[in-house]
Length: 221
Figure 1 (cartoon, helix red, strand yellow):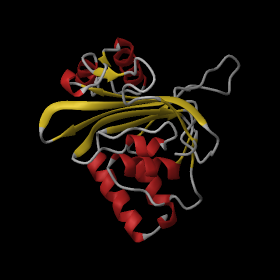
Figure 2 (cartoon, helix red, strand yellow):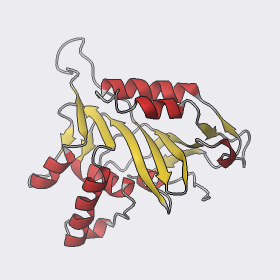
Figure 3 (cartoon, one colour):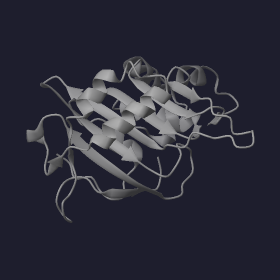
Figure 4 (cartoon, rainbow, N blue to C red):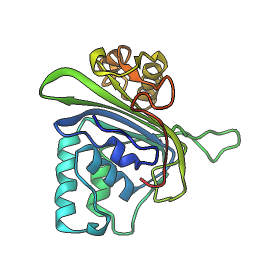
């Protein structure tokens, strides 16, 4: 199992390990750039995203494969009207729209509110076992091209307790996922995953140097 470094790209963290695939994912942000969301889908589908290849045929093919692979598996909840798109987004934006669930909070009125959770919770599965593994990210930054540092926490958890080091159950994670899914209109889809989450053993280091999860700062997506 790999050691996750304190300074690590969020998209690298969410990319499935070799032999695994993304089973279901719930991502939340206030605002997002279309390019970053496309990179997110590439990552969740297991593809490496090379910024120098943006717009190339190879990248477009990988993006199309990501959309097909992740259909009905990934939900991106975000504040309505806060997706930043390039002038010629066209077909790519239409494909992204399949994954986005707008949270229709009204920011314009006095006393209004907006959607601000910034997190990702993902289940991965492989062909060798019915017991999946999970990754959780909680952060302070939106899914945009902003290059400021992000303070956050990443955790890895396992449905099979024997796979976890220093594993412990954290019921509040399942509770949070349940509420986020309901707000995004995905309560039915997440009913079974939430049940699984309640029995996940999360790796939380009891002291420095133990466990594989650490607070991290990601300079970029």
